[in-house]
Length: 253
Image 1 (cartoon, helix red, strand yellow):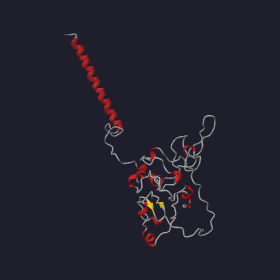
Image 2 (cartoon, helix red, strand yellow; image 1 turned 90 degrees about the horizontal axis):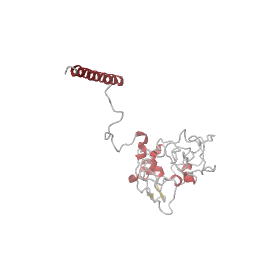
Image 3 (cartoon, one colour; image 1 turned 90 degrees about the vertical axis):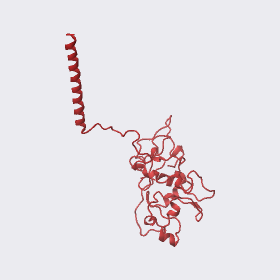
Image 4 (cartoon, helix red, strand yellow; image 1 turned 30 degrees about the vertical axis):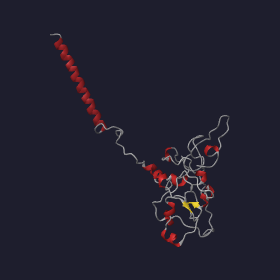
């Protein structure tokens, strides 16, 4: 009994000292962090679902169910289609608002009823074509930026030269998703331009059912200029460079 008394006292003292040291370490750690121990990430189940991040919110502005025609529909035989050359011809420079390529009735010009056709798209018997879908239908005064052409001549002579159109179909490597070659301001609503029978043929997506385009397609690094995104071309085995364009066919986006 006499031997166990001092030994038990020593063990008790060691245990007390260890607890005091642990309490001191925890107190100092809390002080250095400036507050209580907060987890770095929210606990599972606390994040709201269905809300995209701000950077990609425009991608979800128009969904397939919002359109008058399912985006997988190929279009009517004989319908007047859109080409990349025609798309560019309607714009003074890359990113410019397109001019209105058709005549406007007086009530259409005064009331700006554009969204009746261009909010949801669909077949337009008047023109024998599918109406392109606006990427920003929330703006109601369309004629503030989009105007019909009254003449093919310039208002006055000028030496101004438009910037070159960005190269489409650029990829980080063969088989990877193509980068977005243009700025996204007011043009982040991908489905409106790249899906459905009114889309430009060369840049129409083959998979409109996938909701978040920017999960795979990212803006080109360094801007839309050729060569800004990548420093060197990739080569196939044997030294042959891959063909340009999506899937090695040229063109496309």
